Amino acid sequence: DTAVSQTPKYLVTQMGNDKSIKCEQNLGHDTMYWYKQDSKKFLKIMFSYNNKELIINETVPNRFSPKSPDKAHLNLHINSLELGDSAVYFCASSQGPSPETQYFGPGTRLLVL
Amino acid sequence: AQRVTQPEKLLSVFKGAPVELKCNYSYSGSPELFWYVQYSRQRLQLLLRHISRESIKGFTADLNKGETSFHLKKPFAQEEDSAMYYCALMRGSGNTGKLIFGQGTTLQVKP
Image (cartoon, rainbow over all chains, first blue to last red; front, side, top):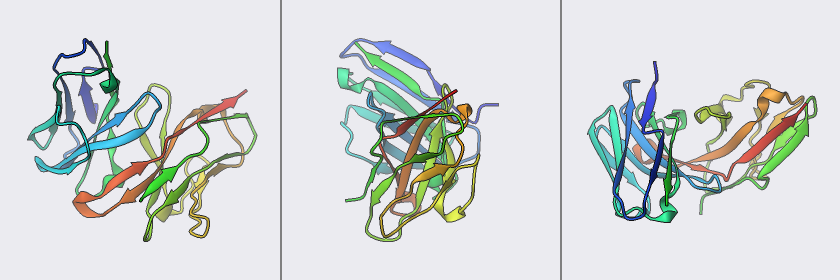
């Protein structure tokens, strides 16, 4: 049974479109994260939520809006997609303030044409 | 500024050879450091953390505060060790703690 799942796995879309990526965890964790891995494999945190509350918001364009309807879900909505948004987006979760023991999802590969 | 540097993008060795994946960090304070691994088509997962001082899959990493390094070592590489390895530093604590990742090193173990 998958612990952290993301949908879709792959997303190909045109510049200017709006798209969403969904993340769900069934580990009972209360903290969830979004990371971006760019074409050079740099992995950088974007957001974290604890019990549906935004905790970390790195310097990310406001075209990116995370939403946590409950502590098991953290979705990422991206408006007006740009070429530079092409990347692999990873969701992760952890129990409490233990980001070092994050459990990562399989990633969503986004390609903006 | 807190930073993690992995100077090698790709490290290629033959099976049975020793491996050392380099990681240097800059951090004001007592660092908490980790190694994560991503095998092909698998998710990123924690390999080891410096506070545990453990050996996982034959890998060890020692924190050297004088050299600000946390290199990952294995005496005899296996083909199944081929993967992407990320060194990471914990910045902050509690809910605002976050992992700062290095650029990653791809380890390729040839038969």
